[in-house]
Image (cartoon, rainbow, N blue to C red; front, side, top):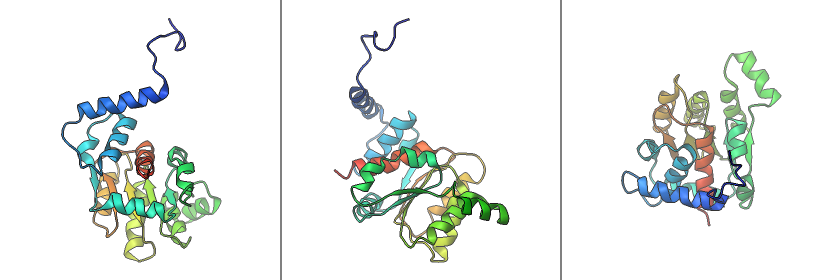
Length: 211
């Protein structure tokens, strides 16, 4: 068996990405909204799943408002360190933003155990005490979305954007539908599909589109 180095048909990384997006463009089932297209295509590139063409939902004007938030230095709160690791923090820092994940913080763990709730929910509460209006990228925990919805109703958080794409079977669909009723900009993957990789891909699509 040939090694990758010996295999003459292996393309360099940049060419692989270019060719991947070319294939995605060819196989799209229908024309996309030009502002939403970069986000949808990057999610497909990350997942190889064309169902996101129809399941990704965008609030009115969300792409423009999200990019404005980034330009103004908004930071991103995530519900997993995997999302945090996947976001291009260097690109975000150009505009003054940072990526935060509080899930491993000891104070979050202590409160979650004491109250019998998830660390994701407590993490959202912690963000409310930070004094900023964040972008939220939720790829794993529907309880983060439920708590965000309540915090919005209580006027304790004013998200610049909620990326609601947790994956799973329990409470996931309901949490996403709830966020789409909140008076905030959102990008939501309807249904059970999603994940940390999808949340990071959406953030990166927004960042790469700033150029």
